[in-house]
Each structure stands twice: as C-alpha cells, then as structure tokens.
Image 1: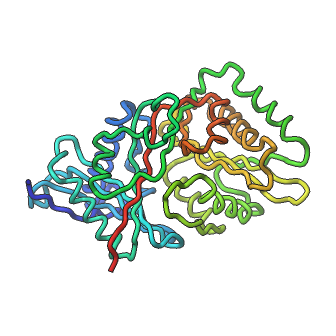
Image 2: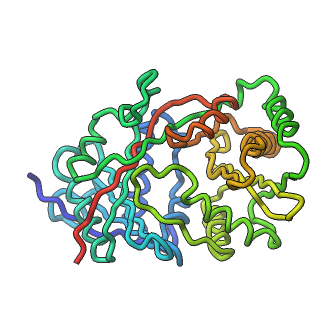
Image 3: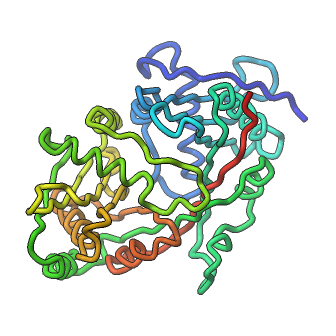
Length: 361
C-alpha cells in the first residue's frame, strides 16, 4: 500500500492569503465530489462560503484533515476528512465525513483519514462517531424495511468496514417549483382553513426579531430530538439566543438567504411551530428545506402543512429564481413525508445515518 500522509488543514483568515492553498484545494475536492455524485452543481459551495462555514465556533469545533500520497508535503491533496465536535451538548459524539478523489480510491486513503479523525475525536473524549452516506434512487417499492433503501454499494461497504452500524434512513426528496400550476395556493388556503382560529403566522427573513428569539431558540432545541433518531444516541441540543445569532451569522457569512415562517398561539402568545428554507445567493435556483416542527400540544391542526405551504409561498414571492427544493426526512416519519408528498416532493435518493463506537481512554 502506498504511504499516505495525513496533516491538518488550517482554516485561513482570508482566501487571498499565502496560507490558503490547502483550504482552497480541499474546497475544490469537496465540490468535485458533490458534482460527481449528483451529476449537477446544485450542491456547489464557493470557497468563500466554505470558509465561512468551516471555522470553529463557541458551540462546535471543526477540524479538516488532508491526505497526500507519499511523504512529499507539497504533493496534491487527494482526500479530506471533516470532523465536527459539539461543544455545548452531546459531548460524547462527533460527526465525520471522508471524501477521496477518484484516482486515489481503494488505496487506503479513506481508512487513514478516518483513523486520524477518530483519534482526534477519542482524544476529545468522544465515545460515538456519526457519519452519513448518500445513495441515489427511489428505493424498493412497497418495502417496509427501511434498511433495504440503502444499497450495499461502495459507500455503505466503507462505513461497515470501519465498524459503523446503520441506525436511520432519510429520504431525499425534491420539489419542482416549475411544475405547480397554482404555486401551492390551493394547499395553503386549505391548510389555513383547516387550522381553525387561534393561530397566526409570523415571518422573518434573515435575523429573528429580538422579541421572538428566545421562543425561537426553544423551538430549535426541541427540533433536535423531535425528528426520528432511530438508534442514534443523541440528546437534546442546548439552544439559546446566542446560538440562534451564531447560526444566523454563519448563514450570512455563507451568503445564504434564510426564510422562516413560525406560528404563534394567540391565546398564550407562544411560538408553537416553525419551518426554515435556505437559499445560497450563488445559485438561487436551488433551495434547501431545513427544520419543520410543531410542538406536541398543537399537533392535529394542520399547522405543519400551513407552515410549509406559507413559507414556500414567501419563497416564490421573494426569490422568483427558485426552481427546486431539497429536503431530508426520516423514512419512518410518515406524517412529514405525507405533507411533502401532498406538496409535490418526489424521492430522488436516500441518506444512511451511521454510528460507530470509539475506544476512549
């Protein structure tokens, strides 16, 4: 096996600096992998956006590790591992993503990158590592075994070979915004009529209003464990106003437009649900659905459909260039999948959520 050297990659202060070469090479490698997998540039992230998104913060430590073939420190980077370690909750966990250039695969590069990342995580006291694999296709028709939606391809075999266990399957769906004749108006009107009195929608673009930020932080915290987790050993995240502002600052740095629709219970004044859409200005045709949550006590009032349909209507109005929306949902989350199917989302692939044990100490 060819010798593989692993070195950390510093996130530079600016892309024009003399120390930015390795980061730029990593950014290019990550974009090439996304283009290779999806066959398009929907997931392309400009280097400046990656720079804003890959630095460590008060709530998350982020590490980049680069792989080179041979011992030459100036050799081309042929692989990268991204390691994320929470700093305010779930201190037993970390997430890892390994990407290897096509010409360097099956030569031990990915394994060495994973080992280096796992050692960093173990040194930080983590006992669990999470990873994700992506797979195109619509899945086996009529199957109730969610694990069968993940093919035993190279990505799954790599995860299993490193000791990961498949714990959850997410459906990746896309909504074609060009194929809906009424722009979703009918569903929005139907949901508004079905939700009944006592609720009002609140919308913001970018930063959450100061008078709502504490309530919004609570919704973000509840969201962290509201969606099905399968066998993933995750606890509720710790969110407060400062963490909301941190997330908003990261989005601004990545040149992202964030659209949030929340629903307020008029009798109590409380926010009882929210949904989030994110659009990167370098490619406004592509939209990403983030959280959607309705608190338990207010379910059964069609608020989930109301929130999503209302935010999609705002999207069409504010960003008319938008053409498609990607979303991820646990395959067992039939409630949210049913809403998405009504809205017109169609499956294009699946993500496997994996977990491995680490030896600590």
